[in-house]
Image (tube, rainbow, N blue to C red):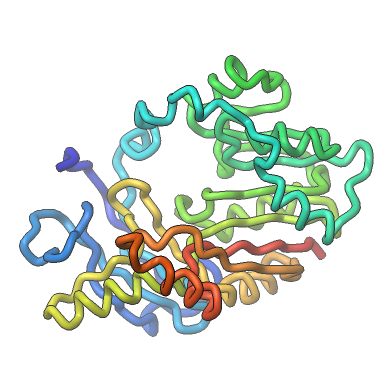
Length: 303
Ligand SMILES: [Zn+2]
């Protein structure tokens, strides 16, 4: 078992994305600070309550666990990241996204892009190849260092910063991408607001987040229910990968009024089932058809 981390807990009075009153939010169940397996009832740990906003289908942890030391969550990435193949950049990397982006905007010389949570800079390089003057911010020092040392990202193009503490001029970028970031932040709506400020009017913000419709969580929660526990599989607020939120498409439609954008396009991706692969042949097409895949991607256009 991982070492027990120290937290303080913050009660949310409102849904972060749509602002609805949290006393009317539905309690889905409890979530342990570790992998729960088939019998969470028999496991030692601390748990928090997982709730769902009925207005926008945002699933979140209330109270929100805030680590005493943020380095406990994001300081040292596992050694497995630094295998040689992790540094290989294939021609297809981020290409699906770039092809989709081209249907929403015309990429012109001098257009600027920003990758928030740039990692080692793979998407930055792909965007540069697609014609962007490409920038990035990355909050983790090991990733930031390797982006420069191993991937040849220029030092003036990448900042060691998080979405919360980075600064850029207003109306500066034509395209901003947030992939696998928003679900880790305490205040995703504030991060969208900040990114919208950096975008030019009509600029595009690309966001990939875990979907609150994911079928596998529903199946596991159903199983927990019939075995008589009130635990749920959603989120991982106090263990890797430290997801604090799952989003509904409605979370973005509702948030668009506050942060002044329109939802230009959206897609659900099946990704993995996380179950025994022998069920994939039935689960994957079903998830495709019912839009209950693991990932939700939205393309937002600044008004
Ligand atoms: Zn909401």
